[in-house]
Length: 293
Image: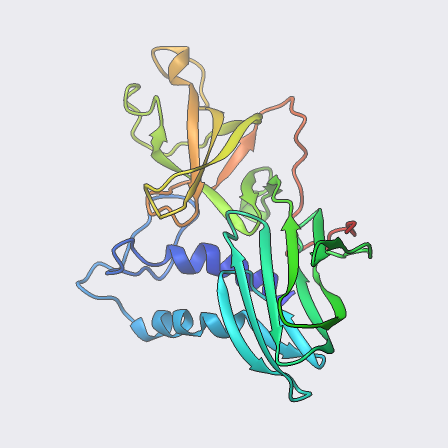
């Protein structure tokens, strides 16, 4: 679904392209290695970035099927005239993508029957939807729009609760045999300065890391790289027996942050076996199975 591609690009590549102070941009944000901004006192093609940022509000709500489609989940409000001529005010309250909880408030000019189409992300394995506190019982399929047709009146509320489980996504092609860590639409990365033992062991490069997926903890709030940013912890292992003066310099406690962290240098890792964690295919490439409501 286009919305799944849009949210992954927006919350990762788009927001990672700009420096935290807003002054610099980069053409390409790498998944491996140091990230580099355009090296002049401005940035090339600034109109492209400004245009897409300005257009983001237009990607949240769409008129569709005589009703409204919710494409992106973000705190917002809008007023639309549906194809029937009905004026509808709608608003969202959410901390998405940090949280999978979304509250939609509807204020039609008058009570009317129309569909509200809710995009169900492909990564979502479990979702609860309720209208004014009454749970929806129908089967919900990831990667589709769930059609919620009701007689809506002013003040009606739709609650969504999407479970945001961690998932280790299989790498492809040059990253075959490796995994990336994701939660909801957000990709996580490793900044070398977030390895506790990195400096004390005198390590200064980004050699490949192996991780122990069963040790994953979090997420926790971390405001150091963006307001409301998320961070997780996981145990890692540098390859190579006897390379470092102590075993403690091979076993690392790593903190993984969202891909927008400008210090990020590594996305793909090798899983250490044995593990109870099963890597999954990228849902944007392979279709997921159905989930219950």
